[in-house]
Image 1: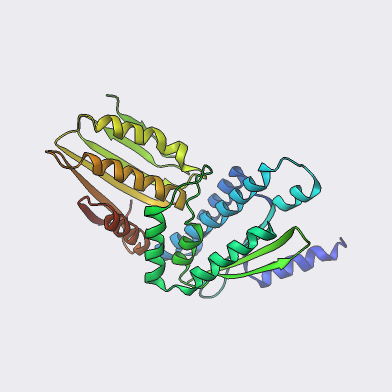
Image 2: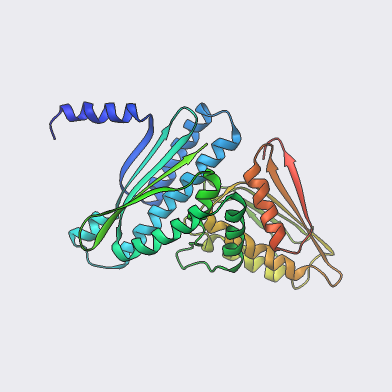
Length: 186
Length: 127
């Protein structure tokens, strides 16, 4: 990479008002560090307790989605390049004038992408009250997986953000898509 | 039976369960990646306590944050407590939330809608 690209990278992040960005494998330690940094940044920057908590909550769920997604790819034992590369994720948090953005990007199996997209489409159809009902229904009737996931993450993210989930699935090759998620929090 | 006294950590709440007083409290944040492990001994304790509960059991929930993994475990705690309620014993829930924290207030109402236990919603300045 030419050295001047470092400056380009800096300017891009500056233009996007990036508070924090990370690319790599999401581990429990990384998760703790990011949350700690963001908690102190939000504490200094954001006066509204409600907004602070919303952003923090969305961040927790997004990070844990990335983390549990890694666990999935861990289970297939082949340590080939594909599986290593598929574990790496992108996380960015930005503050715009009147909202925050949490952006994530990660590789996902193409078959899993289909069901995930379907789930997001369903969630995006619902208004605030309907989301609340869906959350209660999954909470009451759903089962925890052995990873401790409840199937509630995206519903909760949509509820807390108060906006539609912005997403894209970019086709990469016959095995993977790249899943982009942008959550705006007012 | 032995009481539970756990200090809070950045990812798990402080737990104070006192069998003699019938007083149970969760305080702080509950955001572990996998909450099952953390809540398992808590559930076991309640099952044990349920064999000879106090006449009145008070459960204070003072959570700042909890993740969706914990939300299911917390529901299980409520379900176990619901099993103790009735037949001469009573379980009361105090759900604390910080001023202006609408999301945490709603979370309490959501549990209240699912679990037939008396909930008292208590707004405080700071948890």
